[in-house]
Image 1 (spheres, chains in turn red, yellow):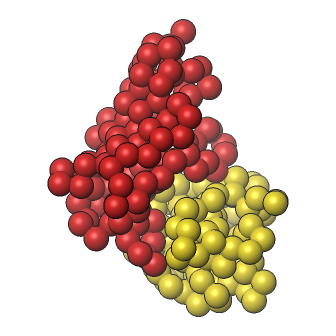
Image 2 (cartoon, helix red, strand yellow):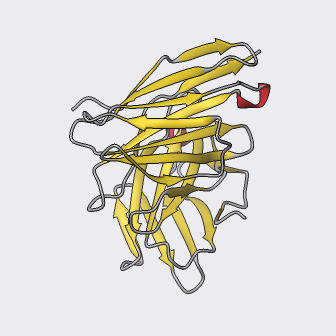
Length: 111
Length: 113
């Protein structure tokens, strides 16, 4: 049973526009959410995170929104740049428990 | 601070053999987790060690095992390798409960032939 779901395997966005990556979760015990970016042949790189006590966290071009009632979070990248082309993983954890990852969304930034 | 270091980067093994992968966490991090990445399956959790004790375990067969040493370095072992074990194995370290972020190494690409 997938506890963290990324329903879009891929997404294409024009350079300069906003990229919105979505993620749904099923476990109401999750209290910490993370986004990672991964290039081929490299390990995932931590991007941004959010605690369940917040509904928004911003870091430069990256903003994560959390909607606890809908068990949904999203990552906004504004403006999108060519170097943002990568696979993005959504992840979640409950206190002292393992981090569960989604299957990832491949983002293509078009010139 | 040096990042998470995994060795070796690439490995080719034959079915039935066993393999040991190594991970050195970021200095000061006490938690080490292992993940398996295969195409279409994302990152699947194998196990987590904290202060030399296995704290969490994923749904993998007993052929997959691990351990953590007193200096927080970790190893994972896969015995009786199968073709389906071919994957990218990723190690991640975390500071601990106060900071749940995980930081990944570059992974070990294991190919079983």
